[in-house]
Image 1 (tube, rainbow, N blue to C red):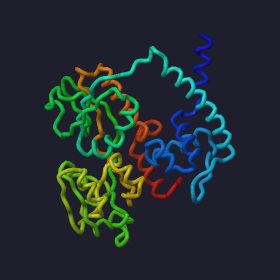
Image 2 (image 1 turned 180 degrees about the horizontal axis):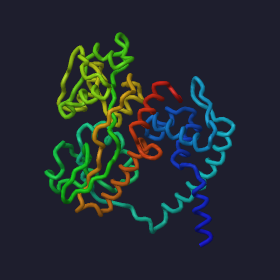
Image 3 (image 1 turned 90 degrees about the vertical axis):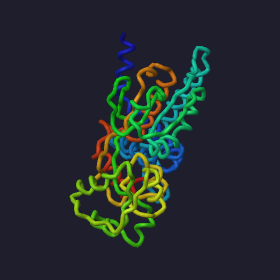
Image 4 (image 1 turned 180 degrees about the vertical axis):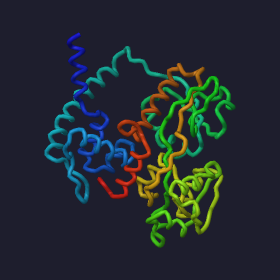
Length: 333
C-alpha cells in the first residue's frame, strides 16, 4: 500500500508528459516548425505545449532566435533529464511489445464523416492510425445525412453537433471555431486590418454553412457590412480550396485549416471574434461500441483531437482566440 501511495504522489509532481514530448522534439530539432513536422501536429500545437510547460515550471525553456530556438540553461538541464527518462521508457516499451502475451488488435472500422472533415482533418492523420494498428482496416465514407438514417452501415461517425437517437452515442470531439481566412496574396493589395475592410473583398460561402458569414458579422457587430462580391460553393472543401487559390475570404473552421496556416497557404487576418459553431462530434453505433477495433479507433481519434485542441481546462473560444493572436504576433519559430 505504501509503495502505491508513493508512486501516486510522485506522479502528481510530474509536468504534463505530452508537453515533455514536444519539448524534446523542439530541443532536438531547434525549431517549432521542424518539431511540428516530426510529431505530425501543427506549429500551434507545439507552441501551446511549450507554453504550458514553461508556465508549469515558471521559467523560460527556450531562447527565441532569428533562425530557430535554443534551450536556456534551465531548458538544457531539463533536456538532459528528459532524454534519460525517455531512453529508459523506450527500453521498457520495447521489451513489453515483444512479450508473447501482447495481443495485436485486428478488425474492421467503418467510418462515416462529413466530406470536409474527412478531406481536411481525418485523411491527413490516418497514416498515424495505420502505423499504430496495422491489422485494423478502415473503410471511410462521406455524407452529411443524419446517421440515424444511415442505419447499421457505419461504426463511427463524425458530425457537426450531437445526434440524439436510439442506438447512437455522441461525444464532443473538438470545438468548431471559425474566423476569416484567405491566401496571403489576397492581402497584398487590399489588407484586412479590421472587420470593415472586408467590404473590399469577395466573401466565399458554402451551401452547408450558408448562414456562417451572417452569424459571424452579427457577432462582430457588423450586420450591415456589404462585401464587394460573393461566391458560392456546394461544399466546404471547395470553399476552402477557393480561399487557398486566392478567390476571396472564407469564414473557415480552424480544425480544417490548421495545416494550411502552418504552411503559410492561408492566413487569418482577423482574430476576433472567433465564432463557435456546433462542436465536431464523434457518434458511435452502440451495436459496435464494444468491438476492439472500434474501441481502438475511438480512442485514437479522441486523442488526436485532444492533442491539437484540448487546452488546459478544456478547449474554449477564448483559449483558441489567444492562440490565433499569438500566431499572428509570430511567437516561436
